[in-house]
Image (cartoon, rainbow, N blue to C red; front, side):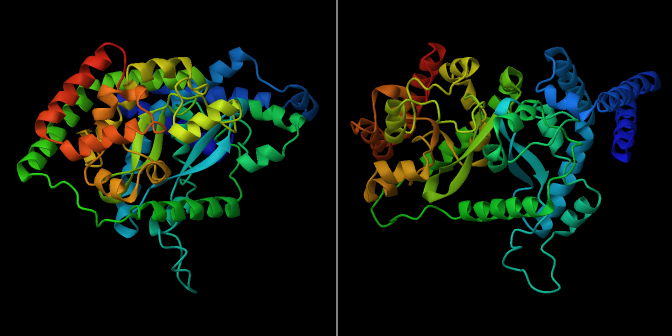
Length: 437
């Protein structure tokens, strides 16, 4: 056993002992992990020829490895959360910004996923590259020296995207250059203890991530001069108080539902159940929209299996009425709007409101609204639901211009009474199974 494995066994014993307060159970759990490591090493003694002829693992073995890995990651989760909190605090004091860096990789059955690591560079690392000045944060240097910058991959294991032992996951470019025979081992689940990726690759990817984050911090550029509706102070105060009261209550009450749905999505294809996308908010501010994933992840190119007609519809409407990428469980959570529940956090943080125009992509706004309409549209917070979703949904399209008209109608006539009507109309549609997208 290598030092990392010995450390893992020891950590399992300590965590399980302090959580369960039972020495026997702690020994049993750590012993199970020890046996798992031993079995893994015995399997690794097979010859290279045997490894080449075995392109996939047996379903029974693969399921066992996944369950064992997830169990261990669950036990270690409290320790990781403490580490995450400490890294978040100290990184925020030195160089505020995203703490986790997603690195795109190709996993089991050619499913692409984001492999998580702690950010080790300063947000201004590129600009401050001068002799004698390190681009790393102090916390980042400590994490790298202790090889703890890989610790967030515990989340990948918990989501089922990785296991503790297995081959390393290739990058998207590496996968595309592979021949079919070289791709066969990729159909196995990648492992945590498979060796680190080259430092130059990790550095390049992290620098690209930082550049993207800095770009998204900039608000959307548009003409602010057109006159927009001025909201009464009373309306603004009541609307924000309603958001602040409703969102945390719903988060607490619906958190079991969110967890069950997220677990079901993850177990259906061993992928990350959550999905984020940059959208444009009030005043052109960009923010990350949170959703539960409803689409498949078994294609490197997610648009490869669309028909030309579907591609044209997607380019025109930025959505598909009958989307081939949607999974069976995804279809259900879309119809019931359960995939939208994480946006309650967007409402609580102030990026969105319960009622407002739909939060849109940068390109979606620029291609479908005029300069004056953009200024009016971005004069209010986007909403979880709105006039278009409640009263028309898929019946009003960008191509016909009806969707723009409905969004503009809300923007120009927004009021407390209209918000109440939209809220209850949405509630009725969700209960009836129509959803409110």
